[in-house]
Length: 533
Image (cartoon, rainbow, N blue to C red):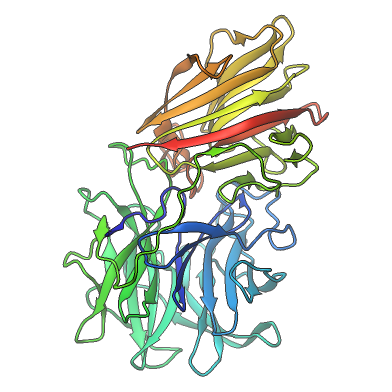
């Protein structure tokens, strides 16, 4: 079997790659979604499973009020031989010239936790990383954000010692690298091999000019010599490649002495370059040349869709069930909530056994307490289905099935109430913040309280359906543009100008709103997620 890229499909960006013994881990960014940081596990680099989330408590990660595409940026997972360390940013502001980027570190003896309460380290920039030197000392790296007029926003990579006993940074701060001509220097990771310190960074911005560059030094604090063949990996200017945006990488050596690099990538769904699955994670095989520089096993330094695996025993995992009947007392690891952690105040799997009960709260525009349970879309072709029981009393109460990018970009098929009609189905969209109702007349449901809802994704298109018995399905609304649920669409205004940052991807799930504040509950019988080629 080959490594089939991307190994982590759907919204799984900024990979931090780690081996501990015979186990491999990939930690990825989660932005405004809770719980924070996805950790995938593998034994052979071919087969991967979503294992855990380390940020599970509000005390570790407060996302209330977090802007779209704020929150958890670029985690770094490491191990010092005794325990795991996880560093992460919780970005609070990303508009204008400033970035508010508090950085934290947590620890655990076991990858499954329990993970500690966070230790605040600094806020000078994002993408914190921890390097464990062979003398036992630990060093924090992060990019530095420069807000001043006429300056390079990506000021450079800073280094400072972290004292684990004192749980704080100590000693001087040193800028060890100012970047290359590609610009946008971020995502630092430091490695030591054959007497050299190798600094790997992301450059060129996290879109189509993204790249991996490397520099090295005999001394930790530099000066760092830039690899003469940089970038060592990029998709820039290679529009024929299926894997675009290659960059933000992390490196491991296998127990068999082979080297691999994990990196961010994305797959456009249309000719406009829109990537509705978000930024994903791929793996490439690497070698070290005679001059001691890292090279991917491709002469063009491009990402490959198929890669030779390491010489390790194959280790497959059980297939993820496509159907969740909500028979457990906790949500599946594949579900996320928006900003606010799952809590009995608004979500229950026990009040009505075999059903997910969600209490309606704030609107789809809220950056605070929405009642949404969703999962990543991980295939261009997929079908998502649920069954809903809900008795809304008025138009401010809604519950249904959503295809969601952020608070300004989503499609929503929902059950609500109209004064002259009673319970109705309505389909709405929000595109770049503009609200629209897509049905000339909502579908009247008489006095029924149960309805089945479905959304079908086919490349750049999606179509909603409804059923009154779960067997006979009816089209509802027009064919919609699935590609608009993407970074590329959401970040550009109607007149073609940049409007806001976007770093996530499409989610599909269940949500409930009660704009009257009465916390009206809706019950969901199951959630089905199927993919096909």
